[in-house]
Figure 1 (spheres, rainbow, N blue to C red):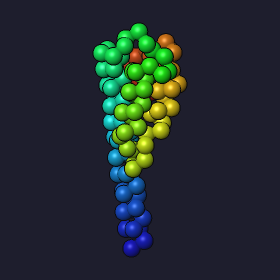
Figure 2 (figure 1 turned 30 degrees about the vertical axis):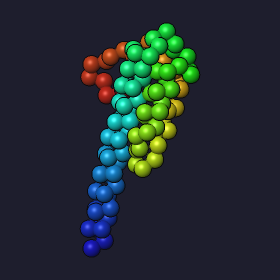
Figure 3 (figure 1 turned 135 degrees about the vertical axis):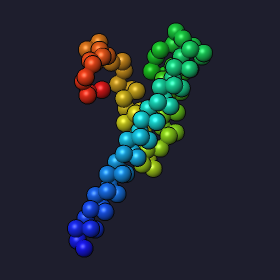
Figure 4 (figure 1 turned 90 degrees about the vertical axis):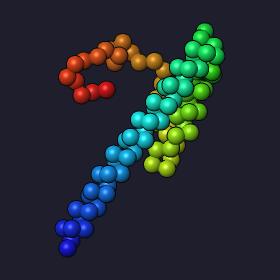
Length: 97
């Protein structure tokens, strides 16, 4: 009986992990799309931290909840700035993102 309860708890925890991961990806995608649209249509030359693209991207990312909490990691990643050239390179067969 103990094994059945432990296995059920493991399955529930594993499922919640995948739900949280999908919700985090959805929040990041929503923020990226909103930022790209704002950059294209609002003010293409204003790329400052208070520009319409970054503000819109952060607000859309934070509006999508991850595990019933705001996506703070997405907002922190948006504040970190652009990726370095080494991190942008695509590596076929690599599992790192």
